[in-house]
Length: 619
Image (cartoon, rainbow, N blue to C red):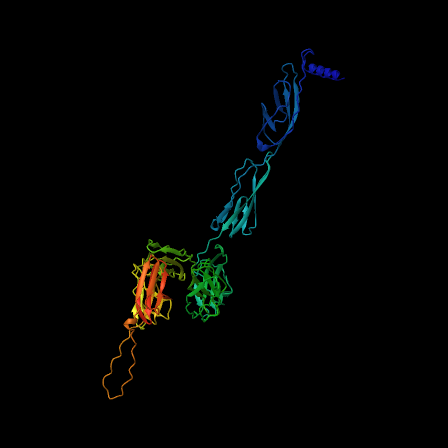
């Protein structure tokens, strides 16, 4: 069946072209889409249908009053409808074909620039509307609204007053162009009146009850009206102004339109003053800032004869902030406080009144480390501790004989201990402060000579102690072992009774030398020499009883002492067995005595008489 249909189409195509069936080919061409355009497009490019034939396409418009065609370009002539016939010529064995479409040309919309708003002086009396350029040749017509003072004749607006005229301009439709409408305004400007001065004035609240407001001069006859911007200060009724309270208000005088003059307005300020209150000065404030001090305080305002409310501000809220009448201290510093008193009753406002708030802070000073030095060490460079205050720091020594200070240099003068204090001076809003540390100076041990044994009588008389030789100038301090035999008085020793004891001596620190080692010496207290009693001279008074003197030991009975030393063994012998031997103050008998190395004091006494005394050095 399909073969029969194809053969029939081929036969029809061949028959229409006059070709023989043996040479004809079937042209297969697509359809054309209807075309709709507006007249303002001017031209249309015609697109041929798709086709398997190489034949040339030609186009023909049925209604040349709508469009004319040249090649494949259709030039629009008018609005309306026309058929477009597209024919493809036979070529290359393909038969010719024809296709038809429709071209609809709608009216164009003219593109017109907007008519700008216009301002016309009233003196011109009229305004002629000039239509804008348009691609359409349609006739223009005009209409005005909202202007009872203006009339329109064709395109001329005539006015007899100032105001705004709203104009609608319409271009009529043509066979090829649609109608269009534009709107714009014409402002008829009246003449601004020439107005004189309306100067500011000042009134005392208690001296004026009312004031008549006189309008400024004007070349217009328009009626004047007055208004007050702040009725709480002053009110206006008609042209009468009444002061109400202290302050400032703006009075606006408005003149109504009086053709040919436009409305106008001008302003003035009326200041209502009062009596200046009597206000005291505001003394400076100083507070201290520390961990335990109060961090806020109530501000005491200057005294004033006005009851007006006080307000306060701080020049530096980061140092001292203010809320209502409470000031809060945030950190040490100096700020300026400002106080203003509002007007009240018949009293004027007061201010600004200023005072200084000084917040004094206790500086935070770092601690310093105690030092240990030896006499003869180099000077110490004193480094000032860090502090929150910029105040100058100076140093002082508790004992200049140990540490002497010059500026920031500590010089070691002698042995001992001294406290070094760093004193920081007060500075602007910082209080003074201080911190201390100790310097311990160990002295050089003095080089001492021997402490010789001491022999003194038991006569209660002081005998100066011969101190050992020393390279230090320190004071010697002596102590006695047995205060019943002898006692110490300053640098002297006093014998109390016969016997032997020990005295210890130590030399105090002095200069670069420290305390010495302790030295000991033997103290031997002997019998005091017996003084003869003088014979009294003749007298009429009875003779006193003569005190018998001590009986001397007969020569035949005086002990003979023999002492032999063999290394550390000392042998004491005597012809009298009643003698007493003391070695270093200890009682012993006759015979052999083995001694330790060192110095030893030997005393041999017969009764109370020393018959032998010797200091032995045993090696």
